[in-house]
Picture 1 (cartoon, rainbow, N blue to C red):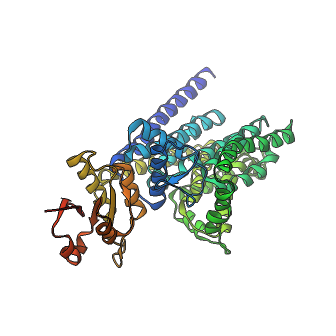
Picture 2 (tube, rainbow, N blue to C red; picture 1 turned 90 degrees about the vertical axis):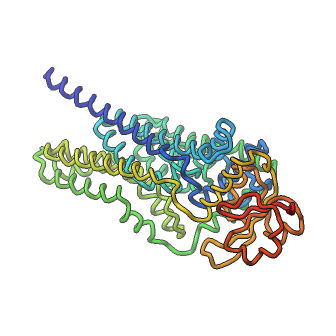
Picture 3 (tube, one colour; picture 1 turned 45 degrees about the vertical axis):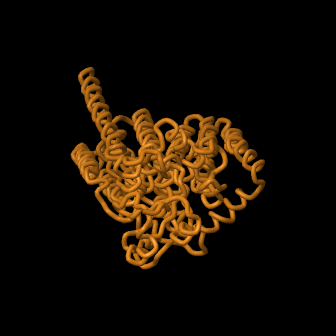
Length: 492
């Protein structure tokens, strides 16, 4: 008996050591070549512009963009605050604005690993950590390696799920869940509507002692969490921002039809394929097992045990499908839930049938390999071309040659659209964000016509348009000519 306990402790220590190694790999995947990653999408660009503008003007409550109150990104400012703090600590760089999301991703992984270790064992926690490492969606687009809001929202989503699970033993955890629901609202506004149904459906699983009282308290706490910001915002511009939240952004994102795109995303997602394999292995183990309990009872018990995780997986997919608009990153929390469910069921299968341990090892090893390959592929980060990367390179060259001499200047651009079909005289969101963050430029619309009229600042010209405009620009001083042509109003 003593020998069995010692062997179990040794196995547990091995699992814990492997978990530590996996978390190190997760950290490495978060930060490796992060300085070489540019702005990946328009949402990230907008959030960077918001955060820098709020940093520059020392605003913490009111979202601004281009020195104006922002009603387009009509979300509360909580997720922008860590970015502002990071800019204050590390300066206005692309790495600085991406650090908060990376730390939020690490926190999500560590919190869940700790939770699974305590609730189940280190075996489940190891499986989860390796699966988390290999989910590319969580790292590479609109999530942990970007300056987007989804990382913090997903962290609060996970904390709500953990509190709902803990409420099975003590219903007081419902109040803490209410607090995190409020924080989720302050992060992404009405996206919290994908969390609230999970909370409601999870109430029957909570401990019965003081359950209804704690549900009421949870509602009050979630509201109290939001009210101070809401009052402060109302004092600034009345109902304007709230009207835009409800009838602007929500109206843009909700359509009249149901979309099936999220279900297609699930069929393509690697983690859902692994989950399908885990469930098949689990069902096979239940059929083969010689356990005295009836197989139906095993299935019912295990389904009840994982019900809240299943709600966390299914509800976002269902809610956004009904909403009708398709944005892949909306269901990223479901990917995390899939990893949790997968780790639990593969361990249950291995517990029932010893031969399944080999399959458990296979899934862990395969996940580590896939995560390692993804990290290796980052070696080429920043090597791509395109308008945005060329422009980013130009800004760094201006910094290198002239330091802060031209910081704060007005800049104009005459460019071609991303598809190359149209000529444009305004800044795309990513170029705008690069400009304000790295060089504190003021981006003006109107292109070459406005620049010639105002006779100030810097004109940035796409080289493909040189022949068209060389007649009016030939005598102007060229500041630099790497990716774009940069002109000053001064003449030779």
